[in-house]
Amino acid sequence: MASAETTPIGLNEPPASGEPVVTRRTWIATVTLLVATFMELMDVTMANVAVPSIRSDIDASYEQVQWVVAGYALAFAVMLLTGGRLGDIYGRKRMFLTGLVGFLVTSTLCGVAPTAGFLVASRVLQGLAAAVMLPQVLASISVWFPKEQRAAAFGLFGAVTGLGGLTAPLIAGSLIDADLFGLDWRPIFLINIPIGIAVFLVASSVMGESRSSDRLKVDLLGTLTSAVAVFLIVFPVIQGQEEDWAPWIWVMLALSVPAAALFLLVERRKTRLGESTLVDLRLFRIRSFSVGLLVTLIFFGGVTAIAFVLMVFLQGGLGFGPFKAGVTLIPLALGLMIGAGLSVKLSKALGRTVLQLGGVIAMAGAIWVGWTIIDRGNELDLWTIVGPLAGLGVGLGIVVAPLQDFILSGIPESDAGSASGLQATMVQMGSAIGVATLGVALAEFQKGTSFPTSAGRVLYIDAAVFAFTALLVFLYPRRTTGVPKA
Image 1 (tube, helix red, strand yellow):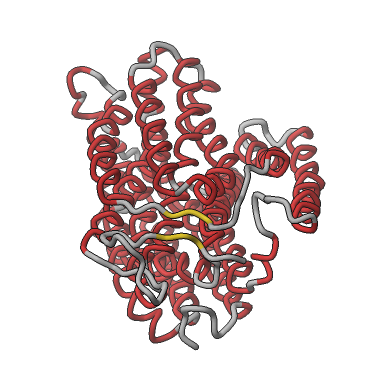
Image 2 (cartoon, rainbow, N blue to C red):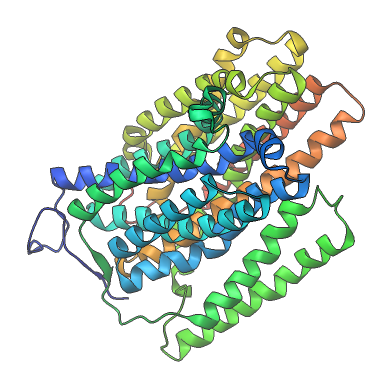
């Protein structure tokens, strides 16, 4: 596979060695992309917090307001693979800026939506725009930094990924409570406009362009079959609990298997004929990539489910408002930041073992949080849970931060966008499956026991998920490109 044509940021000509040179502009561009990432990730969760306000303000039905959240998540998941490949074909800077402009336009439409239907449609378009924008962040980082310096950049990305979801309830609750200019919930979308404009101005001036040196074309058939396969997985998972897991939900999930098989057959045939593909199937021969995707799928199912269960318990069980619930989760976010910072040096010293270390700490943290919730029950307060949440956050940060580096370390630069899109797709699918599965578990536990006991038991299940991901890391190769031997 050919290497990518990459012009290092801050240089007019690539160095003779072919390795990118990291300059001050490289870091400015990286931080700028991470701001965009944080903005996008917040939008996923902030809409959840705003659900009651949206319903009362524009007279939305429960189904409509549910799709304000689900429509974005579904469109985002379906488009990620294609969005990543578009960066390989047309240039990652170009597609990042294109996706960013689309995200700003659709954020504006969401913020001024006069009806529930208009808001749902705008959220779907916003998800599509985000799916074009986000994969370019990981892909750009992977080609801007030489192998020995990627860990720090990917560590920052991992920290931002975790913080985006964890701090969103606090930010959203603050904006809604402030009722800026009498706009109620609308600032959660309109705040993207000044942030996005600043990101666009900086990114357009400091980003270097990179794309695949292969003469790739858009794989229309691969795009269609992959979209159908992802849709048949994500849509029923999102809707399953709401529809009481009706038979048609299971039919759609069953159909996802032949749909995925068809996608693989299409891509295999195109590869054999030497045609452009959406995903180069040879990437799956790189064990660090294929095992890393599996770890991502399962681990992020646990990570997202933790945030979901805690928010449901704090608001539904203890009666906390969105702002107070967000404040309660601050120790989890701070712990994640600490873990992400530690992971950079730990990954260099331990190699793949750092993922196992983080998984074990996350497992212990989830058990600690679950036991504390069960033990304290409805008398739980912020100070009681600070330590358990911080410990859990440290474990999550140690895994989340270096995971992208481990997955993408052996990927040819020409496929960076496609690989990044696939990795992001695994995050979305894992998140949807985790929330749906543990949401069902929470509902079932509540039928026979108290809310605190139910939430605690779900966290014990989460602990088992983290333990399982730590075991999966044993499948990971001891030596991979850019990763020291454990």
